[in-house]
Length: 85
Image 1 (tube, rainbow, N blue to C red):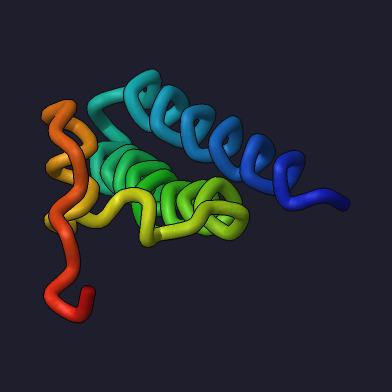
Image 2: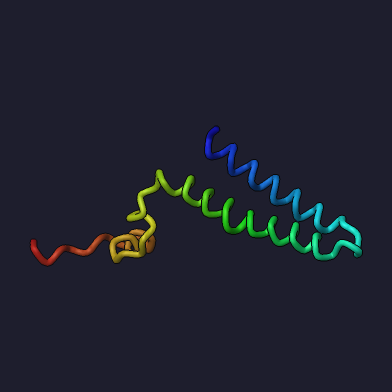
């Protein structure tokens, strides 16, 4: 099973648990809170970190850091001359 499919399964199960928790009667309030809480925990403690890992493993983090060179590139300025030359 691919990671993409597993993440989708976790997200759907979490939303299902949250929706089921909201549809339970007032007499089962403790059980409803457990379903809502477990669905929320599934989304934020399982699905989100897995998604962020999947999306960021092919990225080069140097491109996203605010170095002087990248800031100057965003401003449209030429890069500074290095002190060595």
